[in-house]
Length: 138
Image 1 (cartoon, rainbow, N blue to C red):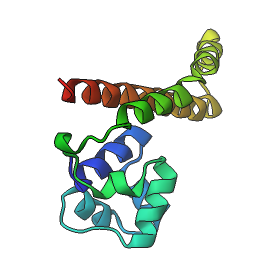
Image 2 (tube, helix red, strand yellow):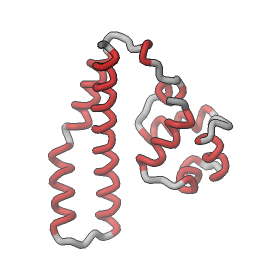
Image 3 (cartoon, helix red, strand yellow):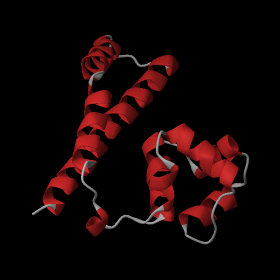
Image 4 (cartoon, rainbow, N blue to C red):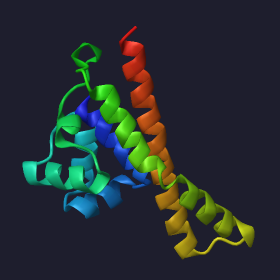
């Protein structure tokens, strides 16, 4: 996956429009569009902010993935990441049930739901990484 594909993916996962992403990182919407179309890269300080904001490594952002480069220990690392994120699953489930219980979702609950969905998407992403690591060994 290329840098541009990763930027598009993490922006969409966070539920940001290009305008919102641009505002968050102090650039224009056109700049974000150029990142996503592979026409330019952010400045290094912006890459660091993107990494911190979306909880991804700079290494992951900038390096193109290559199945042959899977190192020993990646599976263990993927499993640990999964366990770290998935520990909150019970809390997330309870929060979603509580929000849905009255049938009315106010603005604060929408924010909580967005955060919960983002956490669930991270769990899914960790599961996919583990799957890919296991399948790459075969």
